[in-house]
Every structure is written in structure tokens, then in C-alpha cells.
Image 1 (spheres, rainbow, N blue to C red):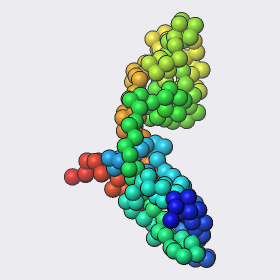
Image 2 (spheres, rainbow, N blue to C red):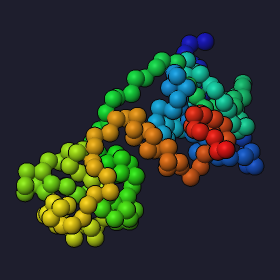
Image 3 (cartoon, rainbow, N blue to C red):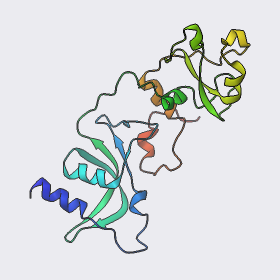
Image 4 (cartoon, rainbow, N blue to C red):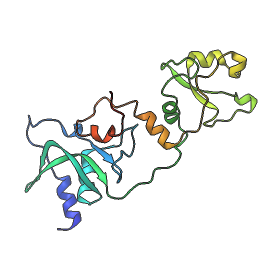
Length: 202
């Protein structure tokens, strides 16, 4: 059978009647790289079930684990994959993009002046009026009250020392940060792949 026909069959899979368990939108697949590490921890690398099934039929991924949830086509039934691994390794970028989200993740979603996680914005450590640049090593997460208090001054001028100096993180460092912020739902089949190298409690 041609791959196109297989894909059409996969996309035609339908869910059984009521009472069959979790809804399809509750069945994303955790995506692992070819070395069986997650593509991303935060946000967690998840694909909707349709994308995962399509990748299986295109032979781009291997199924590592499956849900109990079954979908049906006119001639077959299929357990939805809960963990899949890419067959071709994707090399991550050495450094992440400089975005508001990644900045907050680097700073653990906390103000770098007082530690508050509330009302976060960002602050130029060296103000722009003094030539401060919008870059990893000069911008930090800051709550609105601290940002207003600091104004256009340096931390030394404002008497507001930083909790940690701003740095340009590597992608690996951000991934490690992300592991401290697991999503609300972690399917049991995901846990071995997300925390396999975490030191166990004594």
C-alpha cells in the first residue's frame, strides 16, 4: 500500500463510542530525539495525536509507549502512541533565541531584585540612556514594583543588588531550568524519559 493511502487511513481513524476513556485531545505524544532525550522540557515537546500518528505512518518515528486508548478505522484498530522517538537526530541549537519567555525561564520566573514571581516584566540593568543594550547580559526579569522603583538608574545607584548576574544561557542550561517547571499533567509513560537522569532521593 502506498504511503499516501496509509496516511489517509490514519487520518480517518475514529474514536469509539462514549465511555471509551480519555478524549483524543487528552492523548498528546511526548516526542524524544533519536537519543531518547526530550526535544524540549519547557515547553514540553508534545505532538497532538494526529501529528504523531501521521509521523508513525511516514516512518519518521518509532513508538516507544502507547496509551490504552484505541481508535478504529474500517479495517483496523490502533493504540495511540504516548511516547515517540525520532529516527533522525535533531541537533539542538547551542544558544536559545533571545525572547521574553526564554528570559523569564533563565531567571526562573522570578524578579531578579526581590524574588517575586508576580507582575513580571523586564528591566535593563544598565539603562538604555546610559548605553545599555537589549541583550542577554543586560536584561533581567523584574516585577513591576521593582522596575518602577529602579527607574532609569543602575542597580548600584538604586541600592538594588541583583540576585544573580545576567548571562547568555546555553540551550542545555535552559532545558535544565525547564525541568523545574513540569506541566500540570504528566502521563505515567512519560516519566521515565523526563526524569531518567535525576538523582534519586536517599
